[in-house]
Image (tube, rainbow, N blue to C red; front, side, top):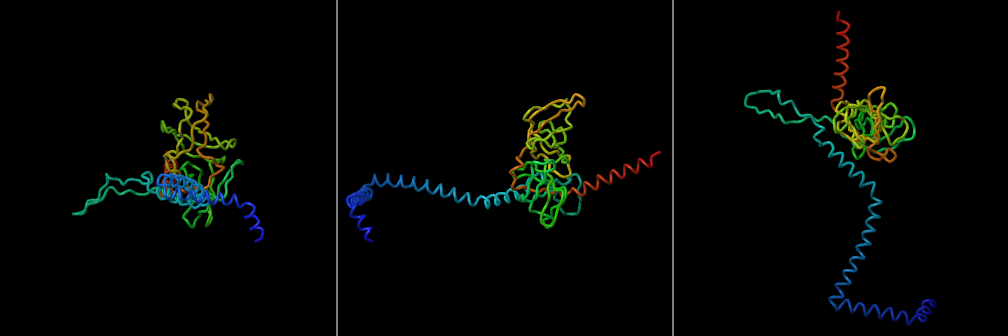
Length: 292
């Protein structure tokens, strides 16, 4: 207590000046309309700046929760896309007495489920991801996996009750039907196990017009992947003189080192398509055996 009084005594003149200065300013802003308006404007700017910085800090600590909320919202919106539905066959009609048949109903083909990446490898020849969705949530082998920006990640290759293992594009056995956006010409996307930033597009003949920067999308000729999703852009073009096909290097659409949220896409008609394909092969083989 004694130190406080000594401090006041020592700086009494300065403290008196500060006190009187505050009183003078208070009288000025209290009874003068112009100065009060200026003061309130400056105070608003200062507090606004402070609140902005505080809000940024608060947003930083809630980024995870917000990211999850937005990802769930995208999941809901993706399931409403027109590309996920097949229109009914309007050429076939069931005619009954005094009953109108609705022919505009659409049948869902693709179903999206959001998931979080728990593990991811990039720097080996055969890279995998692990996500927090499994058989309990309806995940099955061969389902496509998309990044949160809807570019292609890979496909599910193994499932446990609560988790799924995903073979990424950066895998030597990965083969994805792809096409050029400009011409719809189909090819195959694979990885040569060299640079995780680049993929290779095979099967494009040199008579097809291609150029650097062309967009590569998933093809409609796939049981697993929905069509027209982003794979990458052409970064380099060469010609294999021995085969007459291009050697096309594609810059991957995503950075596999920082994948966090994904969508798992189920083709609800895949089983029927695969069974039909197998039955056709069996039928053709049987006919070849029976032919003279």
